[in-house]
Amino acid sequence: MKFQDKVVLVTGSGSGIGRAVARGFAREGAQVVVSGRGLDALEQTVKLIEAEGGRATALVVDVTDSASVAGLVEQITTRYGRLDIAINNAGVLAAGQIADLAEADFARVVDTNLTGVFLSMKHEIPAMLSSGGGVIINFSSQIGAHKRIPGFGAYAASKAGVTALTRTAALEYIGQGIRINTVSPGSHDTTMSLRPGETEADRAARMSGQVPIGRVGSLDEITGTVLWLASEDAGFAVGSDVVVDGGSTA
Image (cartoon, rainbow, N blue to C red; front, top):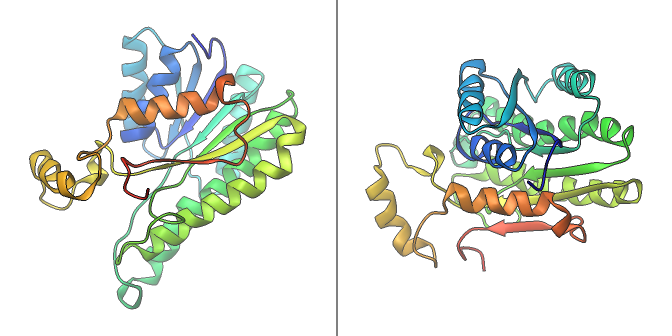
């Protein structure tokens, strides 16, 4: 129970990696706040956590809106007295080559993936400072600072920005007791890794030839990485960008 009674916020936790990470923290004793835009999906995450004996609360937030994020953090600190760990995972994807990509799609990706991380940290950091420190982990991607794929320019730009922003914040606040790092996943067992019309078997066949390890990552594997990075076992990791991609960018 490495996170017994810690207050943990996970954004984008209505599905996929965010949901898995939230469940992982709850299994280790944390009081988890699951957050995102869709209340129904968040409540399903809460039900899964409670069925495993964990504790969770669902709070709606739009990470592109500063007032919404500020309200979320205020609700957490009012209810629980502090915020110990924040996992900023909310993200979106839009595909299209640069000349063909709609300006609105580019703005949506950057607003959610990059500005959303900035706004999250902007409001999380003061809450952590008021209680003596904390841990922040921002989700980037193998696509960005580590790898580029034609048709994913907006996504790559937003995620490379997350990596740079995280490292800067890490230097700014480690002296005040807030440890900030990035996780950059490759393809994992989520719907986002499936191409349109592709089955899981199709994906497995494709990944066998694309990824050195020969498969997608499991949700348990990425969850384990996040839990380690948030724990005292990783206490000397500051401003790191932990790539978890089966060797794709090695």
